[in-house]
Amino acid sequence: MTANKIHELDVTPHEGEHRVPLAWLLFAGGLVVWGAYYLWTYSPALGGWSQGQALADEATLPGTTIFATVLFTVLAALVAGGILFTVALRKKE
Image 1 (cartoon, rainbow, N blue to C red):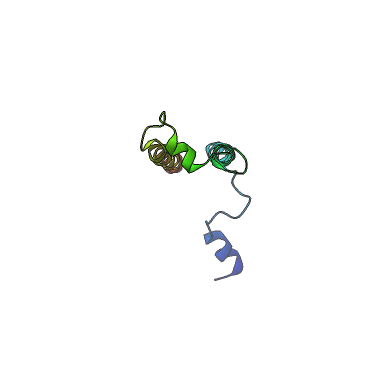
Image 2 (cartoon, one colour; image 1 turned 90 degrees about the vertical axis):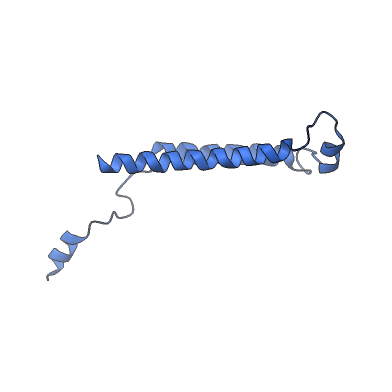
């Protein structure tokens, strides 16, 4: 087999051949924004938050922070899964 034939059989995409899908860029940007917000809100050095103060606050319902953490983790996973599913469907067409 000659070098030209080997190159013809190579169907794997090479770096730079395809653009990153817009949904992935938006998702990555959203994660960066969410991370900055989370760091500012729940960092004792930046936002002044403390676990003792949050537990002493009667307005905070028990389990609210756990629910929020699970919710945002599940939302991120669902968005990533949706993007992967959409990309997989688009490749089949």
